[in-house]
Image (cartoon, rainbow, N blue to C red; front, side, top):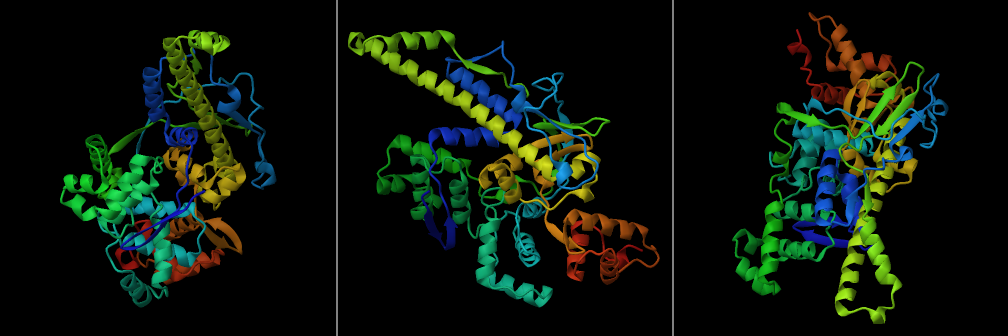
Length: 480
């Protein structure tokens, strides 16, 4: 793995990994939700006639459905489940999963805070990271000096930190979605987006990085003629770079909306998890309208004919035809293999989430969600952390209790009687206490903290205030 370090104003550290074309294809397909995957497959079928729909085949059951045994308790031992091969004969390989209309009610800042649950951070680090998120402007950029943020945290929130620690946590924030969020300047924002792209190591993206790093001021003046002369670019390269620049988002904050939930969103779940009366869970991967694929029999036989002949007996036209056909066949095979790897990755990730969050899938009680990070799922599956992140950022699961984005199952840890519990458990208890309070004498944050501590939640008053504000609950005097 090669590392590259780029300096733009403030120091930004980015680790870049060179991917083979096949790895890049698998990465792109894995990140796609099912409807986007259908469009990608449809385009590939149009571009490569050697790739065909296989109407005689079905998606293999061992990759699309898995059954989980009943449980009698919520212990780790009873959360174990059978392998994907243990599938009842009556379960079809492809399930018809309906589309659903859901409404996202989280603001841009809420969605960023939700991503903190993907990480394993201390309460101190979480508090600082939330303050950094709250300090972003409407474009999603951080234009406040880090020393000023450190001073504000110490004076107004009694949190002691340093610019170095803030820079470290800001670097973490800059890995959040959407790409470019948390940048200190427009230049850094655009560079972060290029460096986060799956095809970042291609010659085109490397040239784009050079434009942004060395010719940013000239780019802002739209003087592509000067950039072309300096970098010795052809007209075709300039056009491609201009197209890539137009694809970048100078305002990543606006890409998620001021309030994301103002519009209804049509969702096709990527997974369905069903419960039966006997305590069994069944997970099915939704392949939607994506058909099983195969390599054209005619093209395979024709290529085999060419390869069986002595190359010396082939004419130039036949050699060119054989080379072109081999490229098409290899491309079709690689695409089919990438789809299989995507299917395996998605199934493996969802099975791990079910195992780690089995109590919720059995009961629908969100207070039973366990603290879970991307790293937990990566260790459970053996997948790379970035792979788990790609799956979790863009996929939805339909359960008996509603449809949820996979990222919803990642929760930060709190403490109850010395044991780790989900922050949602604290919020649920906080909501219960406030709902039951005397509305003529509502509880202050100090009183709420005492009530939670009686329930053995190890929380501080400022933490209770933070959760109350995040839940949209006003202060005591406003609840009368």
